[in-house]
Length: 438
Image 1: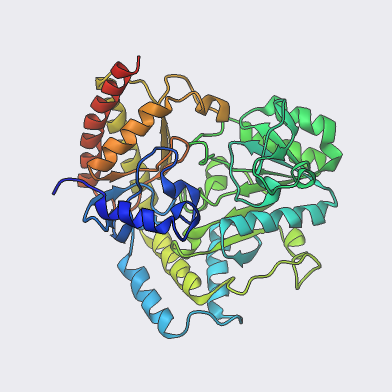
Image 2 (image 1 turned 30 degrees about the horizontal axis):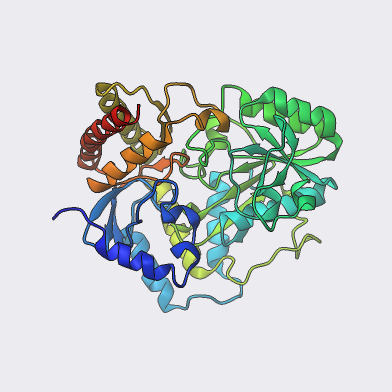
């Protein structure tokens, strides 16, 4: 059956009458790539199925957490049982402790852990904690790294390479944004400059150890170790935002890959098998400031709810008990990237490919990508053409040049071969785009 989005178009138009922009999260609108987003009816394994009866090999994976694939039978079975026992209690359960133990065993730097409901909630809460612990007010973030939509981090850089932030969205006050300093990712000189000027005021540095929200950008050799050293020298806390990388690039996260021990870590939906959940944790002396153990207030009715805890326990248990799972994921991802690269070269494209474990990204540029500015040099029009041609052939990739891709255990060799073949056709269309837009 020919690819079409007739029902999805109708559904999108109706949704826009009731939901701002027709979606409940902006990137779903396809605003960056144009066109109509397919409305998904169901998912299983490596596949998405939309309401127009199209099916897609999925490399978004709900933005990372579906590392076992969609609707994994063991996770579904556990959730069915959990639902029959009730969906939310607002009271303690054994499940919360069980999942916290699993997380702590995997990520030893998280000596104490607080469950929340999203990555945004985790990063928001951890910054309040960092300010309380250090009795300092300023935070450093990196341009192009996204840590959720709360006011403290929804800022952009000012006029210099390393300046006090200015609001990046209406509704964010200048006073709040002014407490956040933005520095270029992988720019150690810029970071040192900021610490030289503001070091005694800086509560924490928050960083994606592998950036996933400007496309996938890797830290340069020695960079994270240098960030760790400078925060220790000035008595500031180092926060790793591993909402994307935790249990994804390795079972113990990016901090295990790079050998860095942060003071605090944030995790996302992967620890809940894709259900709404997040967590933050770290050194015991810092975490004991959280209410009710300490004075820093943070609460949530659905935090640690039994459904998310059940899915998380099942997912992490499967991840830890499946021999060679992460090695196989990394090899499959490497094969995919190499295959797409080879197809691109057939049509004269030298693209930038980044990969770590089961996380990957590519940029339509022949120049190295190491921060947001270099990522922005990508040919967005070429990417958009590539994206839509892949979609037509049943391959669902992130609808933005500035997002990462994700491999799952459910992706087969046949899926990868089909994706590589589809990319050859898509690159041919991109070549036509270049020819017509010279």
